Image (cartoon, rainbow, N blue to C red; front, side):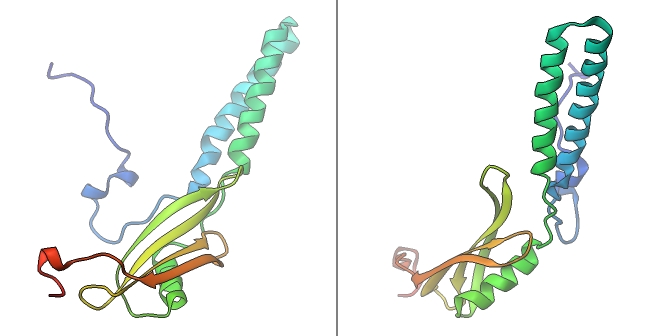
Length: 159
């Protein structure tokens, strides 16, 4: 069992082996499988021309459509998580302590958007906010702030 195959993360996704600031992989990488699907679609199209097999034509059409979708959804993420956190901090209007950024996708074309959860800098946090901003042009799509309803007294905080 010493030569047993094990799944591993690609080097650019393995955060445990990286020292320094983490750079989120750009989703323009979707163009790579898109190009591969297109290449196979062209080979199927060539096979259809050579053999007149309608199945090859159908597969070529499906693969070309999948390839087109990959290219249509390969947005260039221009706003990284650090810039998204800065924009969100300016948007909520209170000094920010802990925060978290998550990249999400919206719509059929999977347009990337940052969702930032922020807590105020006081201990325990008295305010919290949620900001969603476009990861391509950086405009704020929505924001919500409220007094923090969480009760931290059971942990000895804020007593």
